Image (cartoon, rainbow, N blue to C red; front, side, top):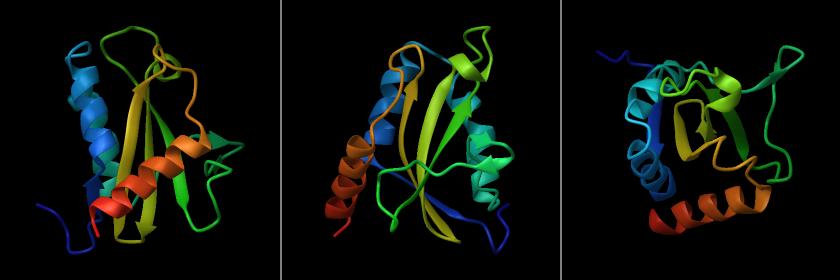
Length: 127
């Protein structure tokens, strides 16, 4: 049961497509991602940290609060560093948008322009 102050999590088409695509190779991806989504739903905005500080993804624009989270891939035995990267945007203290997810084995990083495009695509879909 969700508490009254639970955070609403929405999913971009990009996130849902990538999750589906990755699930064909990594059967456990949904259960790997679930603990992160539960933390986010409880208002614990997790993200990769540097020196104890959660790092926003730079270069997207000050109006966007976007974080990257490392997620362990239980299908491979290499820990979080070789797992998934989940990118999400904090829209408000009570709402966030899962933008995309990718496997570190498929790509090294995601660019700020690509993230901006996903946000823009989602914004135009929901208008």
